[in-house]
Length: 237
View 1 (tube, rainbow, N blue to C red):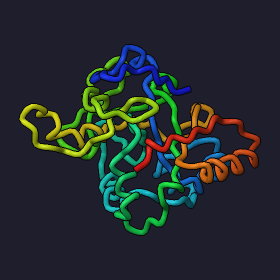
View 2: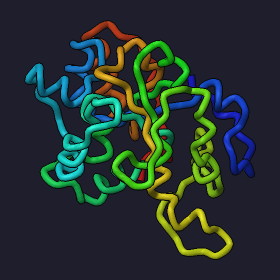
View 3: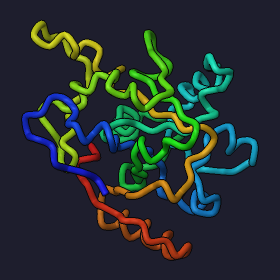
């Protein structure tokens, strides 16, 4: 379940947020069948190793850069399943504006798969305080460091419902808000799950419309799945 008990004027994460920190993975609804067959969301390197086909909704050039990035622990960024710390990602905005090469999906074709960081404490993970390809960026391995992320930019008004996340993430020059000059990069901080995210750790699926919900329900029925499905239009552009 998503906890939505934020205060309207809150500009930093509430205390409960640090014990159940929501995470958001977006994927094409078409990919749910293969995810359910595997009982997991696979990292791109694992998908490639198994020669599994999927509907891509990401920038190809950025994916090439991720694939060329080796981390200090020797892993590759594509060894990890990426999760965002908030809805309304820049990637979804690019998809909405048809800016992703070779991607024909619309927002109505996209689902959020939602979990929380603390539920993943027993599996291998990393997380960052900004986009993992940007500089400077720090990588963390312990959930106790999660307050190091600049949460203020995630929760300043105007806010979306549910969840009360900030609607805006674009960089802006404002002498009274110096953080706005770098908020896009910081808003793109990621929680990275090594190799795969077991399906049972996803607690909610979010879609844009009734039509999208019907599609997801049909897929779940094939697998006798009972996940909660929500329609949150403000999580889309």
